[in-house]
Image 1 (tube, helix red, strand yellow):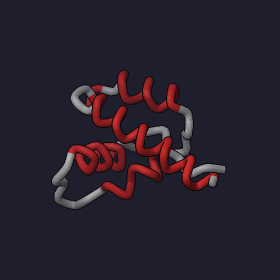
Image 2: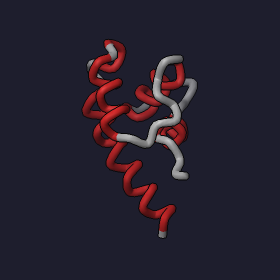
Image 3: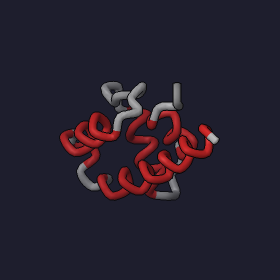
Image 4: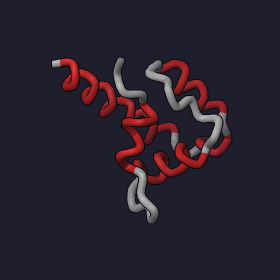
Length: 77
């Protein structure tokens, strides 16, 4: 089983966020309803798009998802 997107994104979490990725990671950490075990793009993307706290973070999510896909491919090699 691969690492979930949530667990991948947590490497960007910081107490004092200084990047878009860390702002998104902190928001995900604080969101108790975030689909933490999901590896599915559509599930996570739909959640991000439909949850108000992520309205200005959708493009950051897309960038982070691309990094996640690369990371998963490297883990499989």
